[in-house]
Amino acid sequence: MHDHESDDSNQRRVVFALVITSVFMLVEVAGGLLSGSLALLADAGHMLTDSMALGLAALAFHVSKRPADQRRTFGYQRSQILAAFVNGLTLLFIVGWILVEAAGRLLDPPDVAGPLMLAVAAAGLLVNVASFAILHGGDQQNLNIRGAALHVAGDLLGSVAAIVAALVIIYTGWLAIDPLLSVAVAALILRSAWTLIRKSAHVLLEGAPDWLDVDAMREQLVASVPEISDIHHVHVWGLTPQHLMLTMHVKLAGPAGNPTDIIRRTKALLHAEYGIGHSTIEIEVDDCADHG
Image (tube, rainbow, N blue to C red; front, side, top):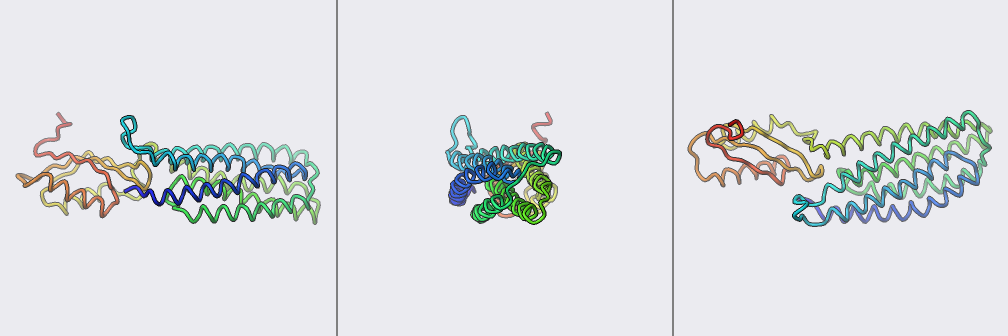
């Protein structure tokens, strides 16, 4: 069953993180321009998309609560997955921008005001730690809040890189450290972005849960419900990873009692053992109707 209370908590966390991120983004833009630091500007750019991503995540939580209607008979819960997928794509664009800027600055390093860069980066780290802690306390199985948390985690890494770069510039004057650390952060963001895109795309393509062994589930159902002789045409997917659905054909072993009772017991087993709360089961007493 879909947990609306959990979604309410997740939405509050996202909105709180959105406010914190949006306010400090303006501070970091000013600091990056005044200091000339790519690491700060890259982090500020990431914060801008974070604000958009967090806003999208909050909107998705709101839309997902809308009840099913004639056009969306399953409801709007998958809007959370769409938000996660879009957030993953925006992370890829951020990575591309950082790499292009870093290449230019490696060829022609600009002057960087190390002390100002350090002060802004340190403040940014505190803000990002607070935002990440808020989001990390939510449901990490929810791809929408996970996508929002990954955006903020990327900011957190960016702040750490900016602090290190500022210290190196202050004590050694080596300006190349700024774009080099930006590239390192971009690589970490890329890995997280690809994971998020892959998982959300799997749900959008109605793939079966990674942990589910369909053959083993079929064997367990046949062994647990004596009236069933065979199960086929099994399809399992999820509106979200937490809201699984199933359709399948069930062939009876022979003359049986009340088919509704058989379906009821099968549904109860699916829910108890596999967390599948919505299942549609077609009962067959002869050859499969689809084969004809």
